[in-house]
Image (cartoon, rainbow, N blue to C red; front, side, top):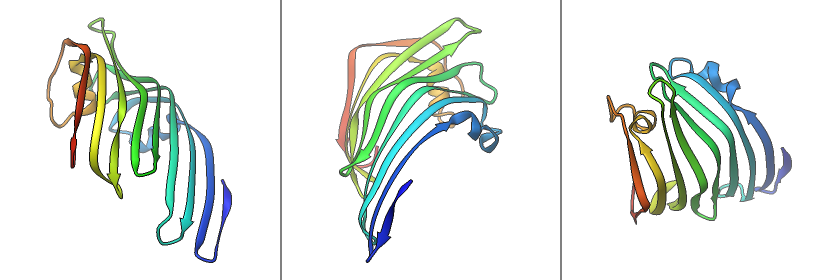
Length: 165
C-alpha cells in the first residue's frame, strides 16, 4: 500500500495477493475446502468525504466446497472490476466438479452492474455454458435444498434490467 492523505484529500494505491486457503479458519462451518489465489489492485482518490474507488480482482484457481456437499465449485479464471460507478465481470468461469456422480459443468459470466453508490441501478449479465444443479446449491444454499443434473444454455442467456437484482 502506498499513498497519502492531506488537506482533506486522499490518494492510495493497494496491490496484493491473497492465498484464499488462509481464510479457511474464518469460514469454518461454511466451507470444508477453500483455496486458490486472488490478485487485487485498487486505488482510492479524491476528497476525503467522497472519494472514488477503482479496484480489480483477478481470480486464479479458486475453489470452495461447502460443508456437507461433495461437489466443488471452482473459479479457474476471471476478473471482477469496480470503478466509474459500475461492477464488471470479465470471463468469470464457474465450474462444478462432482466426482461422486462424475458430473462437471462450466458457466462463463460477463457483463456489468451499474451502481448508484453501492446499490445496483442497472444491470446486464451474459451467461453461457452449462448450469449444474449442484451449482445452485453452492451459490444459493438457502434457496435450494436439493438439485442435480446439468442444463445446457444454448448460445447464451442475457439478463438485463433496472433496480436491485
